[in-house]
Figure (cartoon, rainbow, N blue to C red):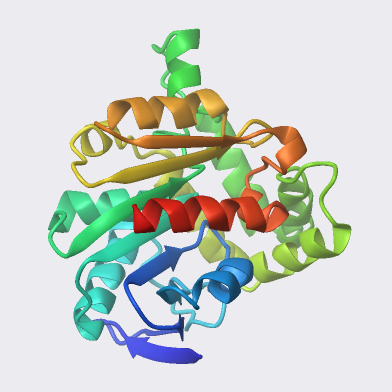
Length: 277
């Protein structure tokens, strides 16, 4: 069931609310939407209360001309949890959704949260010129600073939709159903390109090491060997969090950036086991 919530700056956000039981909130990635968790919502709602939020500007949420920064999305999340009065929440973040979780923890702490599931987001996406090759691999950084601006300018430019299609097409394994891939890209394009560029730049220059290393909640970290996020970066995050569990999908298992869509059965089983543990 799709519902609405208004933020403190009067932006209407849409969210999915299905099932009963312990709450599990799914947070999508950059330029994505709540509907991309359709295989998780359908499979897990028999066991848990599954919520999936469209961030501002994304999916079916309102598209204002402001607020496209990770800390503002984290504040929206804080207000959303307070609005619903949720306690003992398991938060799952995919890609940018992880950054929103890290910003939330940095500002509001861990109270009211039960567990974290961090899916395929590196610690920092922009390369510091002073970093060694080993450090770049551990951080998962893939952009030089000038390259990040070039990508953002292409996204917001006159050929932004075509550039987005090309960029996202490389985030799946060769075995992915083309129809599924096209649907994901169409979902991404619901987010206006100029706002997508603004949010991308805000996200890629953030370094979350000091937040990640202080996480005390039970945490599951998931990545893919064939993902645009290096598996080395996913392993590094798991190593920074005391007691964290790690799951890496191989390429043959659909281990792309969207492994939760390419191999939902394995992904959902991993989630169930971790949440119930």
